[in-house]
Length: 118
Length: 113
Image (cartoon, rainbow over all chains, first blue to last red):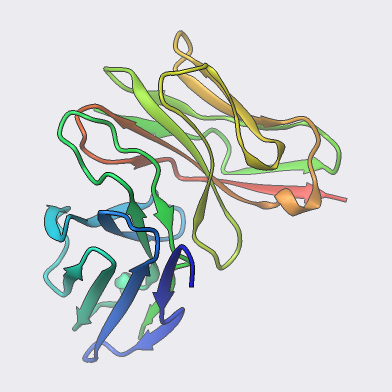
């Protein structure tokens, strides 16, 4: 495997289910990100992990719970989701992570998980 | 505050014609600027980026963009469109407050045979 991989690619779940999205980066990067992509809206940054430490949580509802056990793996645990949570969830990674006072540089994206909440 | 505006959510060009996708940004300090492309059922792929070096940036697949500070623009161009260029294109900005990327809402490019 190369680059950033995400599994599953498609997920359909009911509002009472619990599921997890997985992301793995094979690039040796130090930072990983979760984004939500909804139709007609800009990409929404959800979470940032820098050297396995969570550094950003953009007011994401608690029904989304991230986990970063090491710098190569990132999970998004889902429970009691709402239909409006249906979207494409993208994982990304970057080389240097988030350094205070420096602009963010290039991020590498996975193919995404298409989530449908019934 | 930062923001990115992509004029035109849908752009159609004929095969072989010039591609011009517009991006304007607002930033109080010199930004980094990026163009990403997203093909159906795929993630975002970097086309090119501006990080305060040369103002004319060349990227992959024959695309280029010019940073114009006076116009706060970073428009994406390609001299001759190919069918394979049909995709969604996103402009993004970051700056040295280190907050995050700000993405535009995207422009869907259709190439007409």
